[in-house]
Structures are given as structure tokens and as C-alpha cells.
Length: 244
Image (cartoon, rainbow, N blue to C red):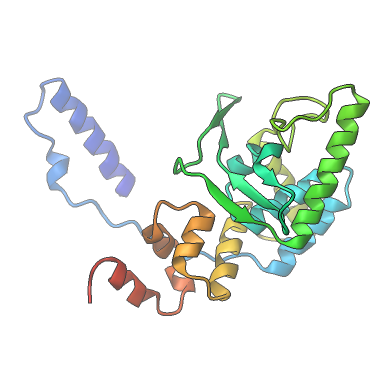
């Protein structure tokens, strides 16, 4: 019903622009409330099983891609848009600047800002940092062997090793789905983002910290999606809305 209301509102708006209507009747209607299903983060052990499975295959990059998604809570397009210059390897542990994302339109990859047009700095855990260092060493070795020295603006994950094309977005999703099917794990790739949020909330992190790490525009989005995972979230929501 919510989509139907939006469709009718857009159609009536076009009628107003064409002069067929004086006003948009849908503006006077109250759209139905969207029923947002409660987020159920995947089990950590299941996610680790998928990552280990991916690491054991001939393309271990998948394991690092999954690990980054779970460890940072970033979006799939943001992982595909990562470049080596985004990482601070002198920091312990490694930190990453998430400042761009890949968007696929008609099978063409386009580099753009993040969804909220904001840059955020995210710290990585030690194991993810070590996996990233090993991947960088392999990429440098491959680049030197092909006569193309690695550069800071190189994409971390590429469509084909030794090329400059970034990894297509659907490659990660397809790999994740394949490994989950083999292991009997029921989880979507996007659920790795929810896993990071739930782990932060379980650790007692403030909603402002979770919102910043996930790249939400504000805490209201975080509360709307993850309030059922937060003890006392109803109180926080009232405070954020100005209610006593």
C-alpha cells in the first residue's frame, strides 16, 4: 500500500504539472505506515565459517571482502570502491577512510560519494589488518611481476588481477551466496552490516558511535533500524525526539 500511495502521488503530481489538476489529492491522504521487520543479525560462528571457507579456495580475496564488510559495517559498494590510499598501515591496528562507493548502472561501474556523502574513519581489528597486509603484499608482487608497479590510487579489489578495473558489485554477492549454500548458512551479504551494528551495541557502544561507524546520516536512522537490539532504546528515542 505504501508503494501504491507513492505511485499515485507521483502520477497526480504529473497531472498538476500538465495542468489537468489544480492540486494533488494524494497530498491530503495519510500514507500507510511501513512495517519494518526486525533485523536478525547472523550468527558470528556462521559468518566465520563462510570466511574460512572462502579463504581455503583459490580466490582468497573473497574472505577479505567478507571480513571487511563484517568488521566495518560498510556497504558492498564502499568495499568495491576502496583504494590503497584509503588505508593507514602505520596505525595499529590499521585504519581505513571510507570516502567513496561504486554504483553499477547498466553494467557500468561508476565511482561516487558514499550514500550520505560523508567520509568516515574506521579502525580495523588485528586479524583483519593482518589479512589486509598480506593482500597488499600479494598485489604488489603481482604488479611488479607484470611490470606495473602498485600505486596508491589502485583499487584494493579488482575485476581481474593485474588490471585497473574495480571489482563488480555482484561478484561479492554471488560468492557469498555460493559459500552460504555450500555450508547451509542462511544469511544475506547485507546482514554482515547488521552483524557489526549488533556487536557494537552488545559491547555497550553509544548509538552515536554506531551511527558514525555505519555511515548513517544521524542517530534516528540507527534507532529506527536497531532499536529492538538496544536496551532502553525507547527512552533514547523519546529523548532524541525532544520528548520527556
